[in-house]
Every structure is written in C-alpha cells, then in structure tokens.
Length: 134
Image (cartoon, rainbow, N blue to C red; front, side):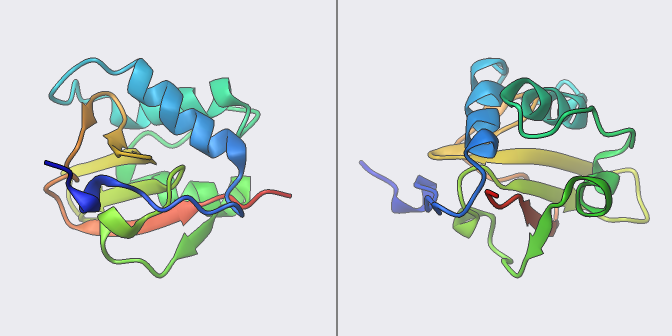
C-alpha cells in the first residue's frame, strides 16, 4: 500500500547538493533508531555532498537551524508539517530550552540523519530550513 504522505515534494529551487546530502545520509544510516549523533550525521552529509564547505560548529541539534541561517545562507520556511517539507530540507525538532532535540534531512521518501525512517521524529518541529540554488 502506498502512503502518499511519505513522498516529499521536489522543489527545483532547492540546492541539488542538499537533495544529494539527504540521499547520502540515508545511505550511511542503516540504523532503525538514533545513535544520538543526528546533527553530526547531517553536518557530515551536507559537507560530503558539497552543500556547505565546512562543518557547522554548533553541538546541539536544536542550534542547527540558527547556525544554518546565520552562517550558511539557509532560509526558514513557514512549514509546520514535516511531511510537507521538500526533499533536501533540514528539519529541527525539540524544545530550545531542553536537551531533547533532533535534526534530520527530508529524503524523497522519508527522513534521514544517524538513522533512517519513513516517519517523522516524535518531538515538536522547531523549523524547516532550506538552501536555494544559486
């Protein structure tokens, strides 16, 4: 049975390197559950794909969106449903005041970071961030 919610919209304005980063993260994350290295996995995939030149310096996943906007030219979208995020988007979850947080990339058919899943993270969505092609 096909679940239409799993299919991410493909937006041609999104930097193709970010779509590649999502693909790389999915290939390198065979786990079914987090290994608590989600932000490291996403950062590494973005650098490997050529989407960004250097690893972001922030440590916690909840800091990912702010750093991507301030230092790497990402834009926060007004999307509140992770399933509506375009392929190649960075999704940040959690509570900015607490340690519970997660970051993942939207793939064409799910989500990937240090693990891959067809389903969104259980934490509250903080923001959806994209990098447009130049």
